[in-house]
Length: 435
Image (cartoon, rainbow, N blue to C red; front, side):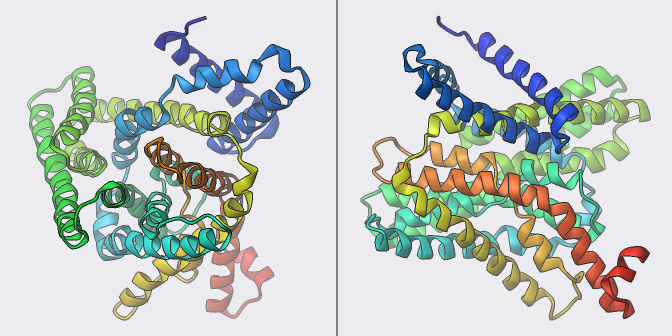
């Protein structure tokens, strides 16, 4: 039976509702994590059933349906723009501006440090285990797994109470470093697949990075300002909601055409509309409708995205040959995250103080998600290292969402209580009572 686009959308929404209901009633996990867990269990059940009753070909049927969904294109050229805007529109720009240096360094220098650390270590590991991979392709893995996923991060922040300064750093970094990460990934893949002179390519890569990053920011500001002027001239909440929706799709589509960073463009536009636009261009009634609309869209697409992450394991598959590589990749990525956060914090701490425990929380709170999977899936199919990179990526993402996501709340409580105990001279038990 040929599935239409409408059939696929109905299937995804139906599964999201059913799995979400089951999670709410039975598992009681945070919605996004619960959907990933249930989807992974469902995927495992499909595999086991197919092994037990192979004549049904149930796995081939389900995999064929999922294969019709181009996860990479659906996320990177569609869902991501909406999710980034929905996240950015709720962020306090004043909080970000007050911590611009920390956020800027972690989202730029931190991503580059992490990319080369992960790439270097994994290059050594892969070659030591018999997978002879060129260094530049190891850097490709480092680039796609280094940026934290804003969708996953912002979803977890809704369930955890942390100091506002730390929340602003985590949220701000996740919103911007994925745009930087996508640019770095694009450049390194171009270098890996190009036969051009290395020195010339690196020079061009730097120019491309500046063009994409700053071009995206300029486009986002310009599009946001035009939308702001239009919204300020009217007071009709339905039309103003439509203007914000058009802003997202048009600015992202234009960014793709101009070969500049779409993620950075919609983040800048979202911050502008969510702060300056909400304050000066919207009535109270319009603000309520606009923010409720984007909150609903955020929850809906989040559910579908995390459901797909869990189900995509059937498409990605599991190659036992790369199992050890996948296991090793998890601590390597965490260690690189720690170093890439520690360096900017150490530099900035020479002039200002940071919340105690910042390094631990920022390291463990740097979740990876759908963006990394989408980038890995976007690699050319004729790339001989794609299977290994994809397996390692999926292992890190699943560990990040489930293990880091579920332990984030107790970790934050413990770190904050320990910091309070150190400041007041109390032991941990007393600190837990006073915080």
